[in-house]
Length: 447
Image (cartoon, rainbow, N blue to C red; front, top):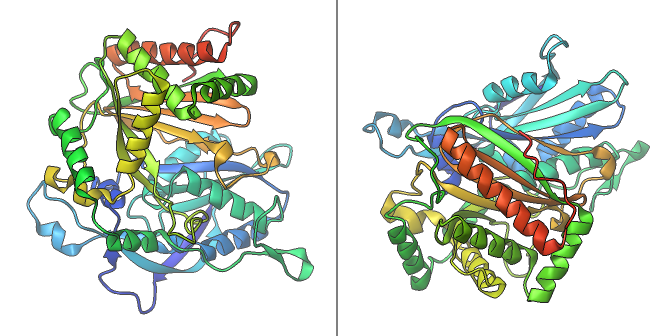
């Protein structure tokens, strides 16, 4: 593990700056295991010294990696249950060294989870770590882990791409070669703190958007959407169950895309039509789900301003639809994206922020094929998951160049295993049916 040492940035404001709405929600829950996310990827057979130097260059490029979160001292004396005021503070990297972790006999995945549970903490200084595992055949795998307050899935790809670019692997727009053919990273990209301040300067949401949020919250009795079927007793978080199913291969995805084109919509609304149909089939009512959307939209004339930055560029919206007609699903998706185009904190202020409701249901759509950040195939990138306790349901639809997968996380109760398992199976079968996949293997959920 590369242990980075840091210090307060000279001249930084002693009180720091306001954290984003999502950063404050995340850090306000306090230090806890499983608050991180990570990416693993193959690195070339070079020395650890060169890998460490490459990581320092990446840190120098990304201002987000030179910030830490702190709880404002004034909030420590507020009554229990009061919102915690979280601030972002600037730091500088003063050095770093490699440190061995584990004895070499344990499963590296378990060692990494234990390490990141401690090191990648919302209030870590810093809240990220780089590790490198050397395999018996001499190949090496790097893993970058960081607390969620400093990154999202897109950010992980940016960090891995930049590391590989400095190490001379793959292509990187704007990377120049200096003496000896060593890539040199370009100037720093905008940090997530800049994005937070930019949001604060934006106009408030129009009346129709505020009214739409008010209706959403009223329909949910003041809470965010919940999974529409029984999850059993989730009055407190339970151990998680994470299941993954290979829904379609590349040919199946291509067929699904043709079906979407024939229906006059994109792939996501067609998938939403399947979700609505499954709800109806299970007597679960209309589809209502928290719907994360990215907030990397740059200003006019600089639409890619945040594309190469690292941070939590995600905001939450709500997707609602009660019709399986793909065109109506398309309108519902557009509505949800529009709701997520405005800062969330002022909109949810009447409800004390975004309520963390037991049984909350969220849907995420991630088409990695369309991201402007791509990794070379030889890097073999993989998402590394934390283990958490949960009281809600989260479903990710992930599309890569090898097909579509459905990943579902839910609390480990007998009722949730039954209802969420059935829901996942019907969703998978519905997507396969539209794609015309007749001879697919039975749905095999892999934990």
